[in-house]
Amino acid sequence: METSRADPGTLAIWTMTDGRAGNQAQALGLAEAVARCSPATIVAQEVRPARLAAWLPARLWHLLGRLPGWPETGLARDCPPPAPPWPDLVIGAGRRAAPFVAALGRRHGVRTVQILDPQMDPAAFDLIVAPEHDRLRAPNAISTLGAVGRITPDTVEAAAARLAPRLAYLPSRRVAVLVGGPGKAARWAEGDAERLLDALAALDAEGVGLMVTTSRRTDPALARALSQRLDPARAFVFTGSGENPYPGMLGLATAVIVTADSVNMASEAASTGLPLHVFGVGGMSAKASAFLDALAARGIARDFDGAIGQWSYPPLAEADRVARQVVARLFPGRPVAGA
Image (cartoon, rainbow, N blue to C red; front, side):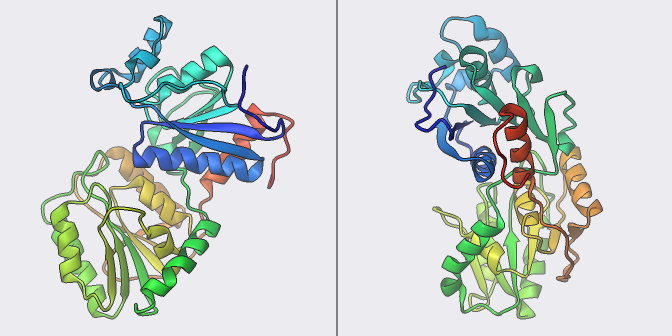
């Protein structure tokens, strides 16, 4: 195999996603965790299928793998196919990346890790990393509590130091508020947005410093209302484009509120060890509900009832836990820091 290693002692890692933010965060989060426990370089690769090809289920992409040039011929015209030198390890996330990850392993002997249910034969990968609520059962599967991500105590501390001067005007009692929106995990019922606004306005009136960030799924009307309803002297609301300051918000907060629709946001908030208050919304999927139930059972999260409580728990560090297993199982004999 022609690899991209300049140093034989350093693992060459590719992350492979369709460019979606949630998938990128998980693939990079695990790759960075591998690099923390064993020297590695990381290159992010994006594979975007053409519009028609994107509708094909990953299982069919895999079955078509014997066709000449497939799956690369299914890529969008402006998306170049992966090319050598090949890495030692590829970490994919999301069903659209899964066939390309599997192809690297099958053709070039690259070690493969796929995050989330690939919706194709699990045996096509060396390892699969999937949350418990996906209930994926396979000999090569590693279960996680929620999503693996890029948030660590070090990244939060560094981001908080950069953000602190900008938010120095906020009251000392500060709460980070992570607002998602309708999606596969939850539809949001009529009135949910107004309930959230009322609850945050009440905290605002009590003098709590609110640090609010919205997501790509947040209803634009809700984003505007958050800026209008909350007192700018006591609240910071991020609804713009560009780098989201929420890692710094987590580092400056004494507690977190997260809407129930986002597994990624709740998982990242749980990596801080801060009290995690979950704002319930309607139309929850069974998988999302199972994840939140698991957080509650482990003493991490509680339903948000309008008041900010205080409790403690060991911060989640799923990316680091999984990374140690990846190195030990796929590259036996390599030293593993923290093992």
